[in-house]
Length: 162
Image 1 (cartoon, rainbow, N blue to C red):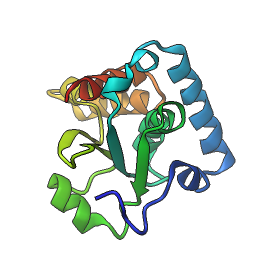
Image 2 (cartoon, rainbow, N blue to C red):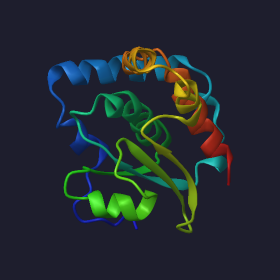
Image 3 (tube, one colour):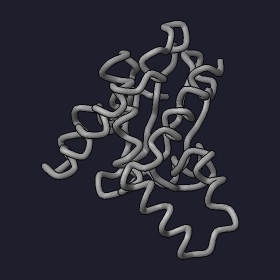
């Protein structure tokens, strides 16, 4: 599945960033390094691959991608990235919708390990029953990096599942 011809590597995807986005990416990666959750994962939990649908203009992608980059760079996880544009039908086939970011964690036997669509589930739960203004405010804080711990916890939960 990940042998996609037009898929980008982490390095190729980072080349689509301007300097401001690269700086934000670097800041978030530093935060991930300071955290203990991902750094304490055991190697036996790392037998998987990642397919990410993302666009460099998407503010939600900019928050989630540093975690995927970290898994690739520091833990050797195979990551392939597809832009949503031009791949909407594939994304819909895989998840039922064409939202980004979408991160699909795939076991080596091509079974689904887990998926994140747009936001971590805990953050989505926090948006339930909020007014439009409250939801907008919370999403803006998410995009500022105020909820990165929820992203990390969601990834760790997925990685601990076999």
